[in-house]
Length: 42
Image 1 (cartoon, one colour):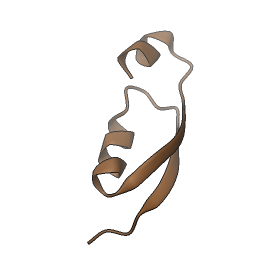
Image 2: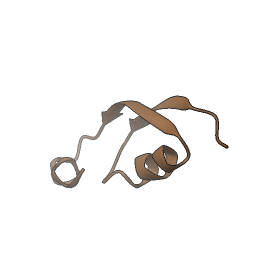
Image 3: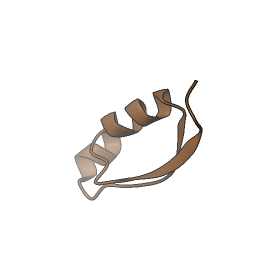
Image 4: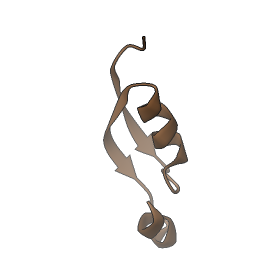
């Protein structure tokens, strides 16, 4: 299976990258987005 790992999500957008990495066994330990509309969706 997959190895567990942690990651940060910079320029997070609406979280698509995070969802993909979490499905591979990753754990998001920090996320950051400056666009207020993206933050609401995230």
